[in-house]
Image: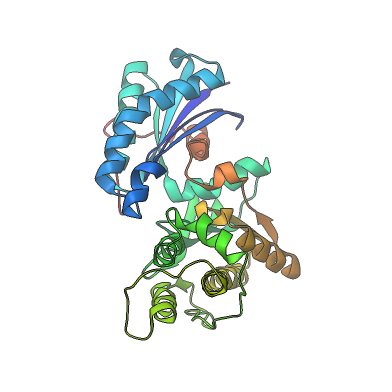
Length: 336
């Protein structure tokens, strides 16, 4: 039995987890920074990096304590080193490199996006590959053809805003606060999804691309009027709820359609979805309906493995089994 320490610091969550070579998660600790970024309506990279610097060691200590193991028992250190915010990634990678050197154990770098898909493998408790993978989060909206856990080819991505980023921006416009995803979902539950016919980019085209900037603009124009982009947010009531519901449905329609296209185009029958936006219940239900209708299998992790966490760095187990270790001078790759 090998004990792994996983470290995640790609954006605004400082996370550490302990898992075993048999893919058992012993602890999964996340120190959130939401309160630090809320006044700014989004993640501030410098603030995120400084918070990681303060929180990494206490978070790792707590993960070890919850797993009931000592630092000396670790057999490998896994760290998400790409993609993400440069300063934030640097904090996690620097910590992981130091631990690997001091403990004289392997260092294993993990791709944050691929780890989100691997979270589906963890929660399923069995092999789910080959499959189509969708990562939908605040910073990313991308489709992958996943032949194996270590062979994931990007086949589609967003041309502008990520889906989660669009949720954050519309939440700000509606005066719903940060983070935007949960806030818009709560508001949308009271609204009519058909109240506004917002655009759905590339919906009827077979290319696997996403674009949410036009949708964002259409929502803003619906609130303030054509050509206007500023003003006080609307207050509580039917208008705001209908805007939120119609916006959310437009995003869902695009994501579900592109997943269906990717599955059929690549002759796959399994869909694995990861990332914070998949915590949205309406999206989960829509994907379940689509996959059931077409006879596909759907894999979605539990809520605690959807948002950024360190347990999903268990993708490192696949590399460890093949002696695929990283050098101790492993560098970050923010834009990969």
